[in-house]
Image 1: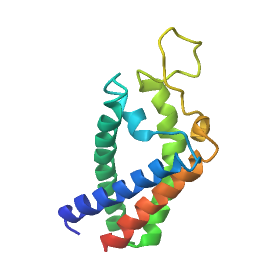
Image 2: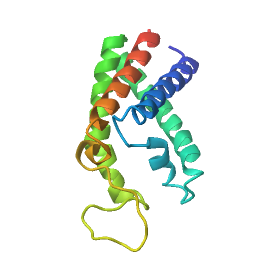
Image 3: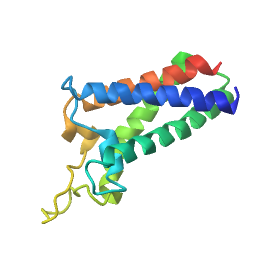
Image 4: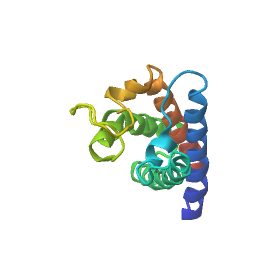
Length: 156
């Protein structure tokens, strides 16, 4: 596969993942707004944060497309189902390690180990991001399964 193909399908897979996560909010599965959460790393402006966050999420999606491509190459398995398997691992990592780490490095997310502060802060995700709703793990895993499936399907 060419690098340009990874850019194209990484972009497409990230858009699909973003659409699934965004659609899960009005469907009542989650309250998590990932572009907003990521964007508030860079700006306290609540109106500009989603734009910054979407740009960051798109860049991370492209980066992960190259990691998936490396996994396809090293394993010799460039299939939709192997992409979904990687997506399951990826989504599980996001829920169990990535989002909880946000509380330690994000300047605007409350730390669950400290008391209230006078500054308004965002709610920490909690274990498996359950603070954002009981459907958050399901929505996150589903979106990452589709992301991996799209990359695996179009990689070969």
